Amino acid sequence: AQSVTQLGSHVSVSEGALVLLRCNYSSSVPPYLFWYVQYPNQGLQLLLKYTSAATLVKGINGFEAEFKKSETSFHLTKPSAHMSDAAEYFCAVSESSGANSKLTFGKGITLSVRP
Amino acid sequence: ETGVTQSPTHLIKTRGQQVTLRCSSQSGHNTVSWYQQALGQGPQFIFQYYREEENGRGNFPPRFSGLQFPNYSSELNVNALELDDSALYLCASSLGGPGTETQYFGPGTRLLVL
Image 1 (cartoon, one colour):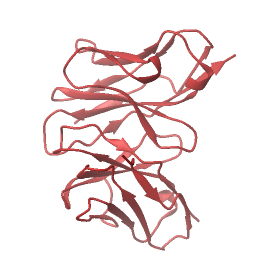
Image 2 (tube, chains in turn cyan, orange):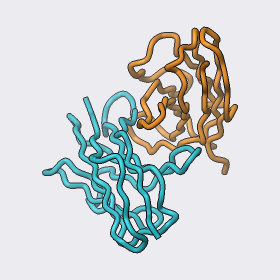
Image 3 (tube, helix red, strand yellow):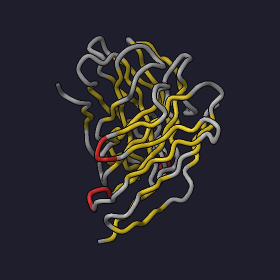
């Protein structure tokens, strides 16, 4: 069984500050890991994904995440927050093998950016 | 290339009714997955269709059913609606066999059950 834990439901940063959103996963097989962003009243947009290639993954809008197997973590970072980054962020895991590629999501983190 | 589309965008039903939600997958994608996102929660996997066959199901009762058509579009049907079925229903499409590809999401259908 696979699971995702996103610590804290709300993170608030100042514009220009570092963004760090934490994600820990549990998976019985090598995982695929994803970060999605959801703006109000919209669907999910893929930010980045890890699929067993490079452990440091770069995504859209200046976000990146590092896969750390020893820590079972896949934290999302951005060096300098922008007002437009305010949204809900979801970490998700899927199995890299098996019958289907269902995504298991964390509960999400709301990112607020203060001017 | 068109992305994933869903219809309707919003829907209000009463308890006990039935509802059908529709999804058109991204061009060339042959796998469709459906998720339920309750308010303040992450999406939960309902089921997945691959080349018109159900290919995995989450912890949802049989009154949640689906179809995938030859053009890979899909329907989610929910019978005997309950208040707790109120949620955002998300469809995601992907290319290739199960377990291999990234899922791209549509904008969702927001269902309110009164």
